[in-house]
Each structure stands twice: as structure tokens, then as C-alpha cells.
Image 1 (cartoon, rainbow, N blue to C red):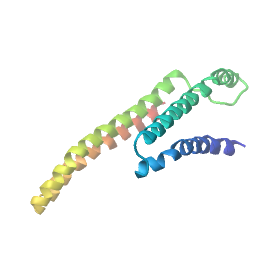
Image 2: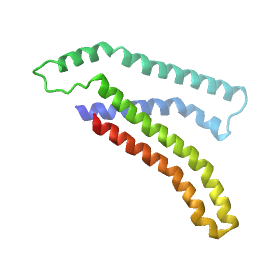
Image 3: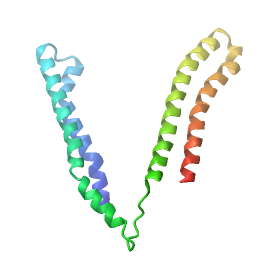
Length: 155
């Protein structure tokens, strides 16, 4: 039963998104233009916004059930593990460290890689020097991952 719930959590939104986007295929192919295409795009965006709002509102209606489940898990005889706020903030910090380091690494590589390609195209002997700057940018992501592993080990 649990596998079916997990499968449904991923399958149902995918089907809904596909059904919302299906009428846009003729517009994207260029087969439909003008006011009719504009109406179709506006209608699909409206339906998409409504589905997104329902995707937010429906889980929020279950918040009281989650609070009851947390209270039941906190009972002494229950074997469920309930984390503390400090652990939650630790996991949040680990995720932020990894995400921000990867964003910084992407910015560094986006600046260094085209310059390295240009330098190598002008002088093939500059490959070793140019690739070092690209690798330094990628090292930022590895350092972020290392810090997040250290944070998680402390929890």
C-alpha cells in the first residue's frame, strides 16, 4: 500500500501537468497563431495557476492530521523518531550550503569555461593552464558538499 501511495504522489501530478500542457502543442509547433493561440495560452495558464493553488491548499488542510501524528510519535511507547528543531535547522543548513555552493560553482564555471575554450582555440599549449581555472570553479561545489556532510555528521 505504501508503494502505491508513493507511486501516486509522482504519477498523478505528472498526468495533470501533461493534460494541462496538451492543448499547447499546436501552438508550440506553429500550427496555430493569432487570437486563438493567445486564448489557448491564457486558458492554460489559468488552469495551471488553479491546479498549483489546489496543490498548496489541499496539503495545508492535512496539517492538523500531521500534528496529531507528531503527538502520537512523541509518546514514550512509540518507536518513531521525532527530530528536534535544531536538527531540522541543521538539515536545512546542509541543504543550503550545498545549493549555494553549486550555484556559485556554476557561475564560476560559466565564466571560466568559455574563456578557457577561447584560449585553447588560439594556443593549444595553453590547455593545461586554462583547465586549472575551470577545475577551481568546480572545486567550490565539492567544498560545499564536504561542509554539508560535516554538518550532517554533527546532527
